[in-house]
Length: 371
Image (cartoon, rainbow, N blue to C red):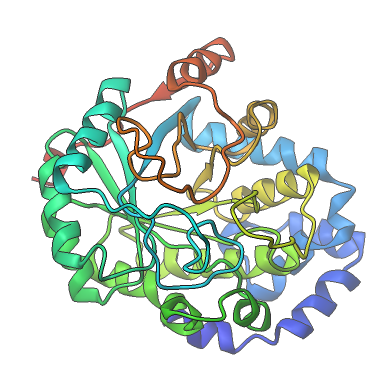
């Protein structure tokens, strides 16, 4: 389990090493072959010393991305099933203590939302819920997947952590991807921002990608919610986690997301600033350390920034996103999880990609490949 590797690292020592790394340390790390990267060897990539070499990092990252993925950008969209939640994550709009309109879609309403996304051209979707088994039990989630999987070549889920057998039930229903963010790998910060509810169990969440890999998901997505703790430490831990998953579950593709904190209902104040330059640094480093990983950029980021960031390493982008249940086809005023920054339609984003010489991909997988 990754927890054993994670616990073997003293994050205070890692922090000291990151901030004390010299330009010479970074240059030596950059000259290393990616197949020989070690936990200690990747530390200089996240250092302030590396900040001065962002242009070089971006050039190398872009070259690796084009060599491995060509000029393709996969498009997907999230479909929120429920905003009911029993956890009190203080940064999240779904926080159980927030006074928002709570809605859980019926199977028929999920079908309507899926039909709306299908009509926009999407063939890859991500199903999401709040942290509430009561609102959306595993059996209900499986039934909703069965209802819509005939329309979509790929269905991923971003839900509360499950047991391996429960993940297997979702795979049998038609899901092929799991996304689960640790939010922060800083245990002290994790305890502060997750004070109550099932999500307060740090290790239960940390072990979830292992359980998903054991269940057989074709894709496993991880990431940190940038702004909850020092982004350099989060970057190191995310890279360490992704390297472990890529090696242990080599049949699965690992995806890494870079969500920055965004406005949501409540009065939470972001404890750490993460600049646009910091975000670019992280994207480049992840591509250099994990050549074959999918790198995901969501509509949390403004349109202009997304247009400038995707060429340096991104392979997957969301488009036309709504963060409330029923946001695509229903007028129910349900509360959203966070505010969207890039509000362009999927068509506009697709045309932008074409104008820049990229191929927007609506479908890159078919279940018949596994037949």
